[in-house]
Length: 170
Image (cartoon, rainbow, N blue to C red; front, side, top):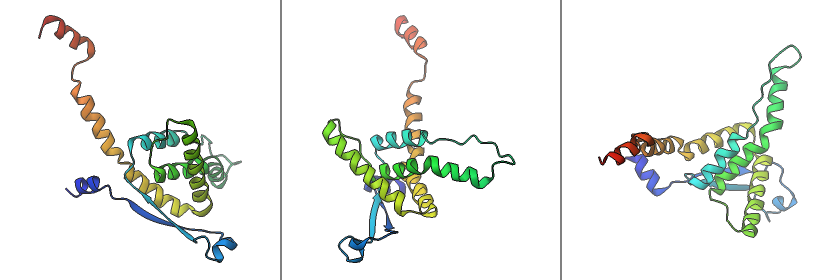
């Protein structure tokens, strides 16, 4: 029951990011030193973009041998995937479909890049892990899979058997 209420109310989860390298503007209190973001349950348009971005993460098929240490493999993974992970978090914060209009979509992508750069510059690995776990919860992948099963469950017979039944008049 609480899950239904949570879904209907679309509770967002807040998280605060502290600026790690404050500038003079932050010290003079012109810009805030913290920024609060809210991740709501992810809409289908954003879910599609997040899934595409996660799917583009480069896996490391490196066999550990005497020449490569675990540290080297970890560093290679950081180099290859940091931008992608920050983009996934930015997409979750953005949580909307991009516009069909080129000019509007251009400014939306600029804003998304700005959020992504801010996330990349100010989160450490532990904070990123917590936010990605939060994001996976808000993506409600299990609900989406249940939706797909319920839709697929409606199609009981294969197409050729359905055509045979329609042809015979049943």
